Image 1 (cartoon, rainbow, N blue to C red):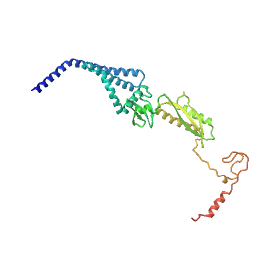
Image 2: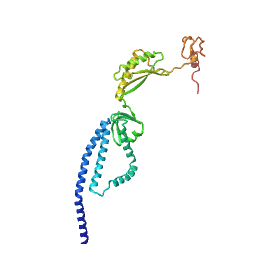
Image 3: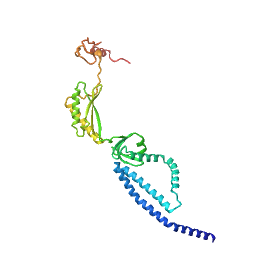
Length: 322
C-alpha cells in the first residue's frame, strides 16, 4: 500500500507541475509558431535581396533556406527559455560546439563540400546556364547546391561534381564573356600568292553570318611546313558552343570554296625522293634551280650506270639460289 501511495503522490506532483508549466508551454508554442511563420518571410526576403544583387537564383534559394533554418533555431531557443526558465541557451550552444568538433571529423568531406558550395555561391565564378570545363567533363551548369554542382554534357548526360573539386581545381568558363575567338589553320602551296590567299579567306569569313566585325577577323602566316604554307584564320563569334561550332562549319566551308575557286592549291602532304645517280643529263635546265641540285651553271652530275643497264644485268642474273 505504501508503494501505491508513493506512486500516486508522485503522479499528482507531476500533474501539478505540468499544470503549472502549461501557461509557459502554450506561450512557448505560440512563440515558436510565430518564428516558424516569419521564417518563410525571412527566406523570401533573403532570396529577393540576393536576386537584386545580380546573383544567380540558386544563391538566393540556398541562402534563403539557411536564413530560414537559422531563424527557426533562434525561435526554438527563445521558446525553450520561456518554457524552462532555468534553461541557459549558452550551455546548449557550448554543447553543440563541442559536438560539432566530433561531427566535423566524422563528416569532413560533407562539410568541406558544404563550405565550398557556400563560397562558390558567394563568389560566383560561374552561374547557372554557363558552359564550363572541369577536368575531363564539359557541359552546361544546371544547378548549384551546397554539396555539389550539376552539369549536363553536350551528349545529354548529367555529371554531379562535388563543390570541393570546383573550388580547388581549375575551371574553364567558356561563356564568362559574350564573345569568343576561334581559329583554324589552312595550308596553301608554295607557289601560291600568300596575300591573295589571305584576302580570299578574309572575304569568306566576313560573309558568314555570326562572325563579328569587332573584333575583326584576320589571317596570319604561322608556319612554313614540309608541303604547305600554313595560314591561320581567326575570328570572333558568340561564346556558346552551339554558335561556335555552327559558325566554324560555315567559315571552313566558305574558305575552302573560295580558295578553290581562285585556283589556290590546298596540297596534300607529299614526300620527294631524289636518286642522284639516276638523273639523266638532259633532265631539266641546269642553269636554274632544280630539286636536289644547286642553282648555277655547274656541270650536272652524270649517272654512275645507266638505269637500263642495271635492269638488263638483273634479268640476266636471274633469281639466286638460297
